[in-house]
Amino acid sequence: MAKFEIESYLVETVSRTEFQDRRVHLVSTLLSHGIQHNALLHFTPANDFPSSFTSEDAVGAATNVGGLNFNGMSFFVWLRSSSFDEVIDILRNESPVFFTYGLRDHPSSAPTTKLVVAAGISTDPETPGEGSPDIDAMTDQVIDSLVLG
Image (cartoon, rainbow, N blue to C red; front, top):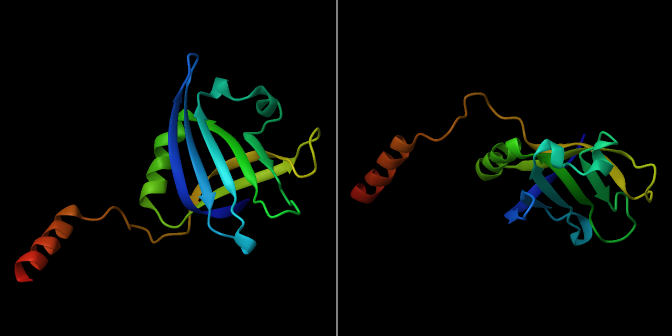
């Protein structure tokens, strides 16, 4: 699996008459020549995946793969709506965070368009037991610093 580090993200909720779509737009850190990759993650019920991808056992498509221009790759990925909260939690609370993906050739597209056969977000390895910060201890430290100056 390949990956790119995420520099920023944007969360959207789009309501339509037939469904509600949650989206997360990911932007990579700057690569050479100012290039940035983009990934648009759609969170929808499993039966709302586009048929052109599910028939290929894929979860999306990537464009400009290996492109010879100065644009980064663009990913369009459909994930189950049940994974939205987990993805947001990782984006908000971990650092660094990466978009990870697996690609394979798309038989009926340009050579620079690939099927995304696996996608998600990941972190670097971490020390066990890192856990969430102890809020009480942090509050005591802030109070001590204010009182003791």
